[in-house]
Image 1: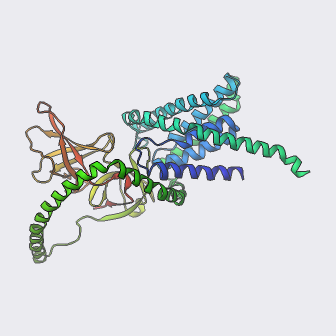
Image 2: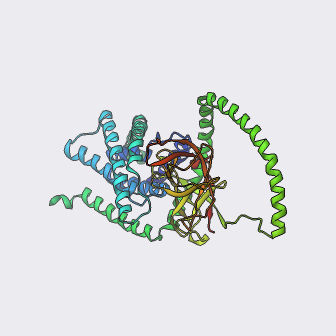
Length: 178
Length: 266
C-alpha cells in the first residue's frame, strides 16, 4: 500500500514537471520536483523508501527525457545517499530548513554535473547516441537552481508533514486496536 | 574495509549493478515495451495538468507580449498584402503546373514516403533536446531519417527501438545538417545553437545570402532527402573578415509544442 502511494506520487510529480512546468514554457526555469522529493525522503524516511523513489522515479525520468538509464537514476541515488551519509554519519543530527536549502543547491549542481559526465562518457564510447551538452547545462544551471530553491520549502514542509502524520498515526494504531 | 559491508554501500552497489544491467538492456532495445509503458502511463495525468497549465501560460504570454503583438500585427498586415499579390501569380503557375503534370503523367503525391508518428515525450528542461516518438523498426524507421512537422525539418532520428524512436532536434548544439539556399544553391551547414535557435554556417564569404532566403536540405546525406524546408535566413551574424559567413535561421515551428510528426522513410 505504501509503495502504491509512492508510485502515485511519482506519477503526479512527473506529470507536474512535464505537463505543468513544461507546458508553462518557462524554458530552463523548471524545478526538478523529483530531486526535491528524493532529498526530503532521504533525510526524513528510511533508506528503503528513498531507494524506491530514486530508482523508480529516476528510471521513469530517464525514459521521459530520452536519456540513457542511469542519468537521473544514479544521480538521485548519489545525491540522496550522500545527504543521508553526511547528516546521519558525520553530523549525527537532523537537518534543519537552512541546511536543507544548501543540500538542494549542492545536489542540483551535482545532478547537472552527473548528467553531463555520465551521458558524455557513454556517448564518447558510442554506447548511446545522445550526450547532454555541458554548455547547455551551464546555461540552464542558474535557472534550475532558482526554480529548485523556490520550491524547496513547500516540498520539504509537505514531506515533513506527511512523515509526522504517518508516525503519529502509527503511534496511535495500538490504542485504536485495543 | 568494514565500510563495504555497510547497508548504504551494499544498497548503492546493488543500484549500480541494476542500472548497468538496465542500461545494457536499453541499448539492446529489450526494454522497449517497458519504456513504451512508462511513457504512456503518466499521459492522462500529464494531459490533465497541461490542460490547466496551457491557458495560464497563454494568459501571461499575451500580457507580456502585447507590444510585440501590435508590432507583429502591423508587419503581418504588410506581409499579407505582399503575399496576396504573390498568390495570384502562384495560382496561375499552379494551373499551368497541373496541366503539365497531367500531360507528363507525373505523380501528384508527395515524393517522400512519410510515416506519421505521435510525440510521446519532449524533455521539458531543454537538456537533451530529444523527442521520443511512437514509431520504431516495426514501422520501418531507421537511424538518420528526417523528422518533419508541417513540412519543416525539425530533427533527425538518432535511436530506433521496436515501437519508439528518439530524435534529436535540429536546434540542439550537437546537430548538423547539410543545407543550401533554395533560390541560388549556396551551400552550408545548419547547426543548432543554444536555446532554440539555428545557424547557417560554413558558407563561403563570396556567397550571397539575404534575410528571408529559404533554407532547404542539400541532400548530401542519403537518409535526408534534398529540398526539405528548414526555415528562412534571419540575420547575418558574421563579420566581413570572418573565414565563413554565418546567419541565424528561423523556423515557424515551435519544436517543443509539436504533437505529431512525420518521419521521411523515402
